[in-house]
Length: 133
Image (cartoon, rainbow, N blue to C red):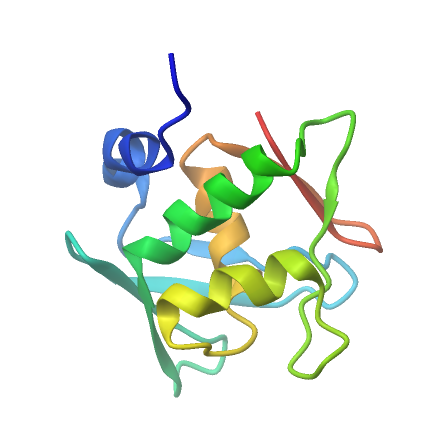
C-alpha cells in the first residue's frame, strides 16, 4: 500500500484540539501557544502573548508528514527541526512553509500539533528533532 500523507492527515485531523495549550519543541525556551480555531482547511494559533494569530493551512501538516516519510525520519533517524527565520533554517522547516505561503517559523507550532495527533515523536532537547511514529 502506498504512503498517503493526505489520508493520514484526513484520518487524524479531528485530534487537533481547539483551545488546547501546547509547548513549542524547545524545552529550554518553555514557550506555549493556543490552538484557537480548527476548521477543515486550517488551524489558527495564538502565540504565547495572545496578541498574534497565525493561520496554518492543512497542507502544511500533509507536507510535514510527507517530508518525514520521504526522508526516512523515524525514531532511529530523527529530523532536526532547525526552526529559523533566516537561511539557516533546516530543510524540514523550509519545506513545510511552502503550503502556507512561506510564512516562517510555523514548524514550532506544527510539530506539537502533529504530536497531539499521535503522528510524530518530538525530541525537546537541543537540537530539537521530530520523527514519524
